[in-house]
Length: 465
Image 1 (cartoon, rainbow, N blue to C red):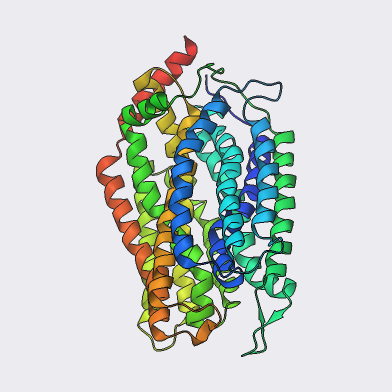
Image 2 (image 1 turned 180 degrees about the vertical axis):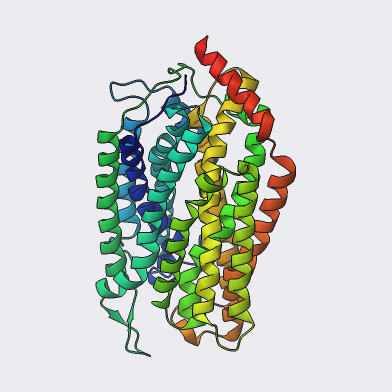
């Protein structure tokens, strides 16, 4: 029997994604700018802490997934962790964007930032894994999963949109520092701290609202098994489609992070108008909303596989147009860039919806193939691949800034070499990453068509037994 959630519950579940993505957006889109321009941390140091943090995430994320899988409380096994993780992540977010009075660029500040950098990943995992792990527990119906994932992604996009649109506008209003060369306000420590605090409070509020109004359905009871690295590797080794998913999703996510992470540098240094990023991101947010319609509409007429391929192709075409208008004209044509970015954003948004549904399918595939179910461990891989994608972005970003000689005090007066380096990272690298992702998905991912229908049928038979 197919289980359905009411429309109200689908929306109240999705609301929680707003707060998660407020924190997520601040970390992935603006932390690099804060660390280089405000805290003036050494770029080589920043290049090193990201891989180190990811090594720990590789251990911590599946451990957290197992802990969630084995949780049993009156509130369920997911909702308690969403609240605990959100509150912890909110505190860390505030501290990460707040200098407690340490010397700018000094060793103690480097250590302080590194510790909180790792803690942000840990606390984000505490909330993110249980939140997205709830999707396959609601229903085994692919259509219902599409709707739930689409609604959650819509709210997720709203959270990211708030950050990407408002941050370039709000930070100058909250900041008090002026550039001595232009006598214009620049983003400073005060602005970042206040804005991060506002986002942190919203994170707690939206997560609490989601947990208070969403009821869990325990399709599979806690197994009672303890985490072991042997089991983690067993799940990864025996679920070949999980490994394929990790690879193509990591590449496409990294492409997206290049745009969002390098954007502040691009509009500040290359365009010379950092507030223009707000309109660029607004157009992207509109595209993200429109992109949420792609999966539910197209899957009525074609397969999810072709829908996903279409999404990636749209992203590639849109990013190529953005690069063309920015690179092949003497002055970047901002409106043409924005319209091309609209197309790319539609593709990216529909891509993310499909990826969430693919993970739910991978859970079922693993259940049939291995004989046991592990939603949270499998979904912990989603958080890990996103962090690995961010690692790719930061390695490319900080390497490019270091090699080109980026000077945070010069802004638009940086050398042409710096501007060219930032432009390549912003506009060229994402295209390459999306093309590679499309190739791997097309030739290696097999959970579609009749094969996926057979897996769904077996899962339904297991539930009846």
